Each structure stands twice: as C-alpha cells, then as structure tokens.
Length: 356
Length: 274
Image (tube, rainbow over all chains, first blue to last red; front, side, top):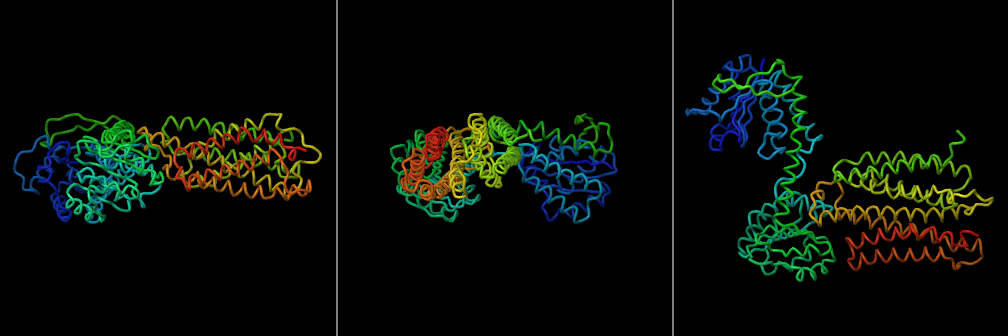
C-alpha cells in the first residue's frame, strides 16, 4: 500500500482556484466516504485550509493510476470542468511522506515555520480517524508527522521569533516589562498597522488601550473595539504619565514627540520604562529620544529589520529540519527505491527524489 | 585520603566556577539563545564540593569557618552560589548563574592565594556562637550584594541590546529588564537586612570583649558606610526614581568597591585582628 498525496497550495495556485477546491469541515466525512467507496483509496485524510487543499491516501493502486483517479475525484467533488495543469501536484512515496512532514512542521507554509498548520493537520486527521477512514499506514504516517513537527520545534529555531511587525513589537515589550498584564498602551493615530500592533499586545494580556486620533469618532470606534477609551488628539501627551507603551502612526509631516517634550514627561513617570513604537512614515518621534534613560524607541525600519533577521534565521534552519525529516521518513518508506514524481495525468515522469 | 584537604575540594570547585565563566563566553557568543541548565548543574556540582570544603574546615577546627581572609572569601562565595541555586530554580532567572560564575571564579582564585590562609592561632578570632553569627550574617549580606551586582550585569547587557536594537535583545533568553531591576532591588534589600542584623551584634560583642558599646575601628566605620550607602541607593531608587541603568551601574560599582576594599579594612581593624 502506497501513500500518495494530491493537492493545491499557495505555491502552485492562486486563492481564486484554491477556494474552488476547498472542503467545508462538515462535508469532509462525506467526501472521505465517497473516496473510499470509489475504491481509489483504502485510507484517506482531507486537509483543507486557506492555503492548501490536499488529499492524503493509502492506496493499492499504482501511483500513476491513483493520481489520475484522485484528480478526477477532486474535480468531480467540486464540479470543476476546466483543465488543470501545474496547479495540482501529486506525490508518491517517499516524497508524499516527506511532504506531509514538511507541512506538519510549517516548512511548506506561507509564513515559514508557523504552527497553525499543525493544528489544522491534527484536526483533519482527527476527523478522518473518528469516521474510521484511516488505517495502519496513515495512522503511523500522521503520528510520525506530529512527532517530527514537535522534534523540529524543540530542536531547531524554525519557529523561533516573530516575522511580523506587530509580533516583533510584542516580543520587545516582553523583553522590557515583567508582564504585559498591567501595561497600558496608547495608540496615537489609528492606522492599520498600529491597530494590528495594539491587537497583538491586547492578545498577550495588555491591560488597556487608549486611542488618540485626529478623527475622534474613529478613535472612539477603535477604542470601543479594544474595550479601551478614546482621548482627544491634542490630549495624548497627558496620558504619558500612566502608559507603558506608545504606538504612533499619524500622518503628521513632522515629529510630534521630541526629546524636549518627553524629558519632563519621563520625570513625571518616575523613569518607569517606556516603549515607543513609531510606525509612521515620516516618523512621528524624534530619534534622539532613544538617548533618554528608560526610553526604548523602535521605528518601522527597526521592526522590519528584526522581522527580516528572524526570517533569515528561520531559512537557515531549513537544512537542519530537512535532515530530521529525511531521517524520520526513511523507516516509513515501504519501497526503498526512489519513486518517480508524476504529473496528475499519470504520464510524463519527473524524477524528484529526496536523498536519504 | 588525608592529604586531600578542604583546600583541594575548594580548588576543584573554583575550577568548575572557571568552566562556568568559560561557558558564559560561549553563551554570550550565542546571544544567550540556549538554555542554561548546564551552568546550573555546573554550579550545583561546584557548590557541593565547596560545601564539603567548608564543612571539613569547620569540623577540623570545631568552629564556623570564618577566621581568616581565605575562609571569609570562601564563605561569601558560598552564600552567592547558595542564593543562586535557590533563585535558579526559576528557569527565567537561571541565567544569573552564567553571570555569577566569573565573579565566583575571581573570588576563588583570590581566596586560594596562600598568604590569605595562615595557620590557625591557638585561639581563633571568632570563638563563640555570637561572633560566628555576626560574621556569618555580614558575609551573607555581602553575598546578597554580590548576587544583586550579577543581576545588574544582566540588566546592563539586556538594556544595551535593547537600546541599540540588537537582534539578540529579543532572541536571548535573558529575563525582561523590569524583572531584573526588581531582582536587583530585592537582593539589595535582603543584603541590607542581613547587614543590619549582623551589625546589630557589634555593640554586644564589643561589650563582651572591650567593655564598651562602641569603639572607633576602621572596619566598623567602613561597614556603617557601606550600610548607609546601600540604604541611600534604595532611597534614591524608591523616592527619586533613580532606576534603570544608573541603579544597575551603582549596584555593580558598589559591589566592586566592596570586593576591592573589604579585605584592606579587615586587615586594618585592631578589633578583628587583636
């Protein structure tokens, strides 16, 4: 019995196509029953997320034939009649197992190393398992995939660090403050990025959000959404005595906060640490405020550069992750010889193998 | 094994502190990204040997082993390790160990200099329980100040990384700077309490020995100065908001001052060296 996978992902197809092939959670058990009843697969798991739709099967068919049948099934299930080419990929062992392990570990994700996919894969497997659509082969393969994902998470830095500006800001806050639970956040200028950053801080336990915006109405809407309060735009400086983190993203053409303005405010704060996140362009906060004691200023370039460094480090970890995966795939592969990679019409052989 | 004296045990412990210091260099180069269990277990092993060394000395002479500079130094180093091993149970504060190792190594090498450990006199300096308690409390206080300086070093490292936007500021496993500041503060407070308790015995001991409650003595004046200085540090922090970098530098500087001057005042003191 061979494990084969067929699917579409963000690597091969646009969202317009992926959404055509997406399976709603409620429809997955029915689709699995149909698939097994058709005789194509003895065991099957369907993974359907915003970035990928994949069918993992254990089948007694020859891989070439299985690919043709699975592609036909996929098109029929979604009443899709247009021709499909490179948008769909099909893999047989050992590449199919290698792919499954990569997906579980977040190595095939749009955001390299993200962990959400592991949860989605576990859910997909659980649905198939609960409806008795999995057997010895897929059970073993998926369990191993979950273990490999865990091993990769603990032994490598692939999931370490933040690769978005908002989460880098949260990490910085966590390196300054003992806990975010008692922290008050001031948002000056209600832009999309500042909103995301404030939301990220709130999700990590920040106590409250104060919003100051030129349009007070917009400030009120946002404050209500965050469960915080809105203040007049001219009054934001008065809040500095209480707050711990300020996120600034106004469209002001000049600095709205400089050293002369901040220095007396810091005295009033009794020099408690203050994290300033300036995501405005042109910048809202004069860079020399960073020379003040207990003030930590980060602008958009600083945050993006940290996020880029993190991503670079994650990419450097790929080789280690691949080595772990190759080692774990080996015992699972029934046929040791290298399997050909085929197109989904069952012909046109391409040899793409993993090196043991 | 009679040739294997307490000093040999202490020598091995110092070597382990040295390994801990080398490990700090490795962690530093790695940007403090790896867990620091290795340094914890290194210090735990060193602590066991250090304790054996002190016990052996104590049992041999049937007194608390704080009679000369060697013993005083080993005692202070021992209190620093003991306090660290308790604090290091919290994984978030385990990095103190890596930073403590170089301090312990330096103290150990200093203590091992032969001139600091002359043969015991017929009548030891600290011959009764009250004297031993007085000395132990003061050395424990110095240990707490030492550990506070170690936390301050961590604070300064992390604060520098954050100020200059170094990636290792968030990639490292050092605790947040606010927590480090709190740790510094608590250890200083503990040190002051211990020093106060230790100094409180001084009038009683002076009365026993010299029949007076106060006697002008370089070490006593020095201890009062240190006591006032540390209280001043905490007052400045609490009432004048002198936290952060200045507080950390003051903590490191004041402990360095103690390390460099304590021995001199101890030797100058006629009360402690009659």
